[in-house]
Length: 190
Ligand code: G4P
Image: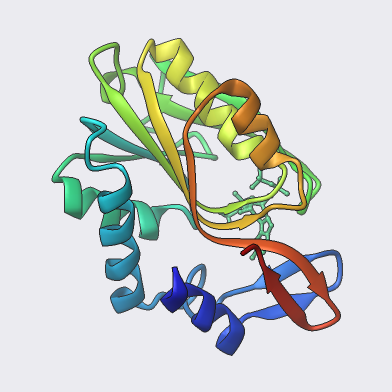
């Protein structure tokens, strides 16, 4: 998606450790016009998939996921990282290790929000090592929900997440695919 690539070139900052800082428009300050355009793009890509629910994980997945939900007019569910006091039993959960933050989180979704009649589109801001995606797959499996696909805003194609998803046979669509970082330069896949 050219609009997104241009924005990454303009505002993205490459940090040590192959991390791209995009807090100007994606995961701290949010650009709603860009989000709306991305929501429309995902909706176009997955329009024939009979999506009944959008699933993401807090926090940075929520903004893009809501804009996709607006296009499909289906509920958006976000897996929670910290069990709230109102979340008691009846949960689907998975353990997710964050390589970037070096912490293990348990993510959870209440049973009542996901079930065997759902066709789920998973949306997330980044795909790096694929741990968040694996956790969300596990939650869908537990709920016996069907996974229609996964939509990613920024895929770092040189990390192992994309391969993991392909191996599982899940349809993956990313709006920007980064093949490498070179100093402060970002290179996209053709
Ligand atoms: P994964 O997302 O594919 O599981 O890979 P990884 O374990 O490496 O990523 C852990 C966290 O770091 C995730 O956020 C992910 O979105 C984020 N992340 C990965 N690569 C980048 C990057 O290049 N730039 C930025 N800005 N973030 C990156 P999280 O732990 O779920 O946190 P949250 O921000 O959504 O709360």
